[in-house]
Length: 504
Image (tube, rainbow, N blue to C red; front, side, top):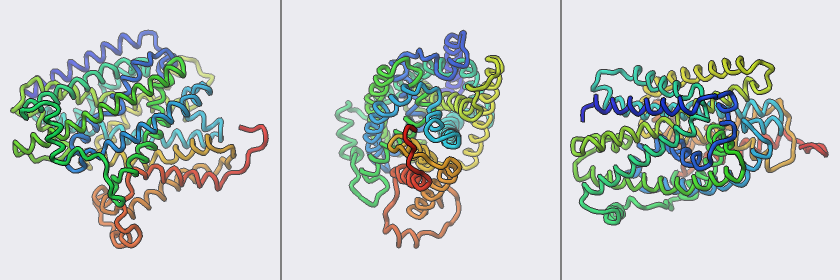
């Protein structure tokens, strides 16, 4: 199909989002931007959160990763299930009991202002880099398969897409995103199911037959029993659990939507419904990866993992309808992971860094500040996307999980220490602990997997001999975030003392 026609569908889809944004943002104020006036429908939140959690990275990298990693990714998903239970029955009751707008306000009430600022700052760092990594991946696919053929440069593509997202989130915030995420999740799942059906048909079989075929190839192996491997099943399950707790339960973007629901009971129903559907959808992405590799083998297609799905979906072998559905599904996966990120970063910076909620400024002045911050984050996203383009990394999901393990660890340690102990800490040393813990765990991980850092940093570290003597082939996997959280917890314990009677 003509790139021009595909591009027209992208523009049409965006105009639909603008229409939804215009309708839902009527009468919006700061409260509706930050927490949707606590009137969000839990079913819409649950469904929309699927799109936010999956993103364009899942849409492309998870199917692409099946060729080299089988269904090992599902081990992480099983860990997510455990993490979501903790969120639903430990963290959400805490957030509702304290009536929080920003979840990092808890850290100030528990430990003081430095803990509050540190928690918010690590969220801002992690979410800004993670969201732009996801954004870069999808923009790059659109660029390679559509926009290069139209002579549109990458920098223009990145600018226009961020402008689109800025336009429909500028006023309504969370109130708007609840509805646009629902629309986008529908588009993504529709594209996923149709693409699976078309590829299965092209293989001349049905669902059960295709499952047997990919099983015969060994792709359906879920559990990796190699203890030294980075994807050893306990590493993935435990790591997945704490990744879910940190990247969802301690993440302002995800919790901002949850606490926009009017009651704790509804928010918990939202969380568990979201969990059940998310597990099914992740299995379908892995299944899609298996049949894509089967199809690629029959056609002699040999491309990078992240390019496999778009290469096949946009090939001449399929009708234009599949290409359209793929593009719509891809941008449907892109927008929820970026619009929510910009909105939550704006909320976090305004509430946690600028203390806008406690300001004596007028509502109009607060809104002006919020709009300036929102625009500033869009500019930051644009700059970071260009940096990712310069790096030009492949299989970016590895980078996102690694970076999350390094940056969300302090959040995990801070919240765990606050919830699990009654001790008070020396507020002036909190920043020291929260900076040293990620540096230590990064050094440990670098010794465990020097080749990963050599590839990403494009330098020779010369750590292979040290790694062999210390780790004997053991690779730190997704348990990285747990190790980081434990380092932070231990550091906080060192600067803590017993609370006085009557204190929190």
